[in-house]
Length: 525
Image (cartoon, rainbow, N blue to C red; front, side):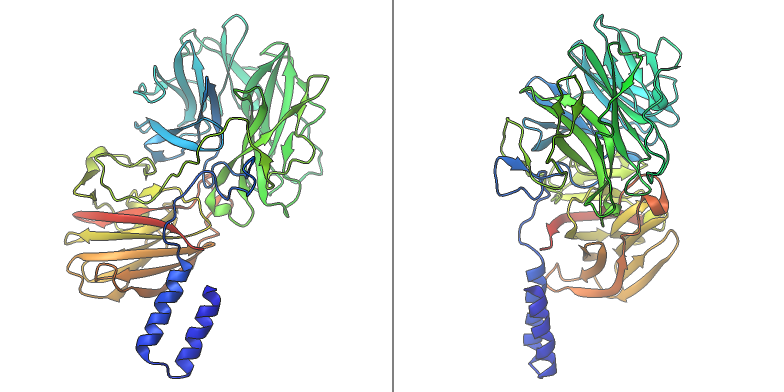
């Protein structure tokens, strides 16, 4: 309908329709593009059948999921890389609808990779690699407070925790190695020992590399099951896969499954690419599931979303994906149900604490920002978004509008950014007299002149990776479209590395402070 309205607007210009009417048509066209009330919601695109759900259960950049079944509750945590506060924990009653709980870490120990969330002896633990070592934090309550990070002084990635029948604790790592843990789980008590070589996939398969990683362990009956990722995390769409092996001891020897790979993308024509990093678990009603991550075809820049699929058991004690299950098709829901949860990225900054969705890139300094009078005040840093350590959130939608009101001191600029890393971003910012466009580490130029009295509203439209900008100097009553735009779909791991995603956020550069008010995140239909 918006396309038809645009056509009519062009016809109006050609037929000398009064300028006031043309302006009205422009406004109506924009309003048709933008919905009136949108909230980023996990579950996305729910199917009409209430007994089914539609993957992903987390849309956007939620890689390397680790899940804990704790009584009637499920808790989940993800890789958070260089974003702090880190290790955000979510809670659910039905595996489909999720509510934020807490961030488990604020101290920056480096890029935080694939964590493992476990409960043992009434305490909660998160094991994770960062800065070429592995760490553990613990808490008596899932909501915290969480301990300071404790260095385990061991290399390797993707720790996977397991407890044997005698209560002995172990951590598995990439490449088939394990170590023994102390009873309290806060130190290691043995040297790494290799006990698993992985599964030999066919040579003709197109993968990124071998990469035996992501070990997750579960026990059913007399067997322990060691589930791993192989084939490389990114690269070709057919790289990543989920494989498994079993043993009557948590330390092997391991026998590979005849049903390997359990999950894999077989063609680049599929909707979900590089499916891998799987966790096998039993829900509170006795059903078994596989949790894993995947890139969406055409939206690689959004990072890895989290998926959920059922698992069935064979008579001889192996598990496999049931026939007829497809990742991109509706799947029967878990037995437990709860009301849909709406998680809104919009923020009026009315609280006294930073809202759950916000994370700083690399430099988390509580002294740098404050919240009062329905505003977020941020100290300016650097001369571009790449130097500013921006405040970011994870967009879950393919197409959306982001908008914010800013008020800046002399010498400071505030803006909106789509940010991958220091060398891959775009930004639209303003000071009291100019709007600026940025699209690399050092390139920033004024693109519009005005007299704003220090208050400007900025708007960003992202339509399937094609981005345009708007500004207003009258409090959002009228908007002017910038002649600057960008295609951001190439800002992804295969181009820039790092296994990151293109995040949406705010930045303040120059000298002084910038106040942000009324941040809005709304879906474009």
